Length: 186
Image 1 (cartoon, rainbow, N blue to C red):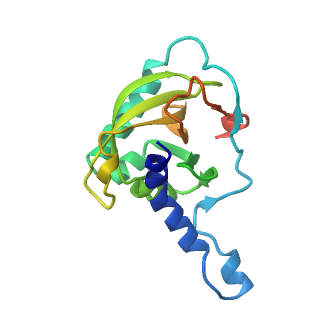
Image 2 (image 1 turned 180 degrees about the horizontal axis):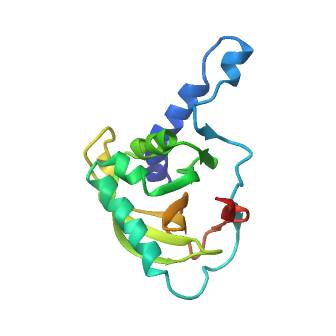
């Protein structure tokens, strides 16, 4: 399980590390990838507890399904249009604030797998926990041995767009769930 998550997070981690590595002046070290920042992003905290009772809003589920189907076809631009600006993403990394459409496209492009939505359930504080079956997809990434595995992501949908995309353990009933304190500011 951990190896699968690590394998999925490595492309994003490598890209982030490459943007911050190397010598040069203080100005070089302080340079950032345009549109991506680590602060002052509202950081979702992790809180113990069971998922919220109730049902997932069908419109929220439709947004998640449309995003997954679009990315699985290899349409990175189309998948990126389903995110609000700014949005927050964490694929096994610290949460990143994606402030430009280019940053959102970059994030979607770094996901090596496509995904088919299997099920959703309510999470804490308006999050929706979506479980996917990972697939190969056209484009840069190669899913490899992760194809066929399940992966879960916590989504916060605001005004029909993805505001938060946070990778979570598959067994979210026993694991911490994301807390969206401050997430409503998008």
